[in-house]
Image (tube, rainbow, N blue to C red):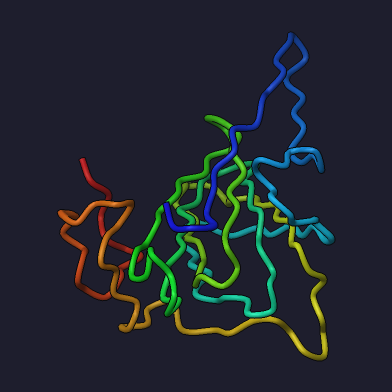
Length: 173
């Protein structure tokens, strides 16, 4: 994975009533590193909606969990000094199948697409407060032709490598 991108398996405690899960704990240091989550947000995205690309240059990292529906969360690394420069990670989050929380290094371009037939409900935490007057966000269009991965999920053989990233590329069989 791209340096600074991590996945953490969230434990579902099942019983006859349903389930209970802790989706965030400050003592998950192996996952959080030195981050402190200071804000939580909720988003609902209708099927097929793409919310991309943006990044944070003031040190914000994002922690994303999909509670219902499914999303394809992507991070693209174009940092000059990075060992993973040019790499793109695709992470499928599906709250129904299993709970996972993804940590995205904020200085990497990132975004997601709702890939389920029902709306996707996403909760995400941030390591810095949103500043209304001076937001920590650079943006580029979801279909920016300059997002050209040199590998996808570590694979150089993926047919999308070396081409502008296509959010609508059909899934592999």
